[in-house]
Image 1 (cartoon, rainbow, N blue to C red):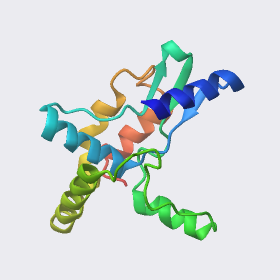
Image 2: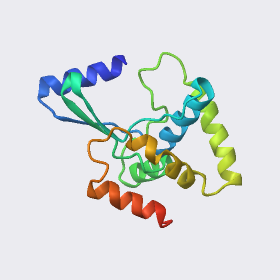
Image 3: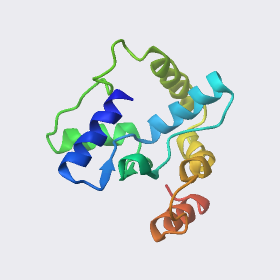
Amino acid sequence: RMKRGVLYSVCKRENYGVLALGQHLDDQAESMLMSAFHNGQMRTMKAHYRAKDHDVRIIRPLNYVREYMTREYAIHKGLPVIDENCPGCFESPKERARVKTVLASQEQVFPDLYGNLLRAMMPLMAAGCADPEAPAVLELKSSIHSGEQ
């Protein structure tokens, strides 16, 4: 929450109306499982929402992209690859790493695991979106339902 507050402050200071966060599909799946395991709720991060108290729109443009794809892209473009995605954490994110291991083992058994999880999470990720009928959302829903990945 401290990191998010800093980001909101920068948006306000610089007069930015949109904040793009870098969570990817693997993050979404891990968050959903952690929520189910620890809270008994099917929740994950929204793909798009407005932080009304801070007058900024939050987007997660990498929501539908696998983590390995972001790494491959960064390497291909000569960008730095940061192994740990939580530089503000005071200790290693042990629970997220454990869930990541669970998902990796299940992906060996179920090769379409992340596509299936994406389909299951779509209503959770879209909940509260300003326009669930926006062309980009409709196109994504169409590709998911037709089996395209």
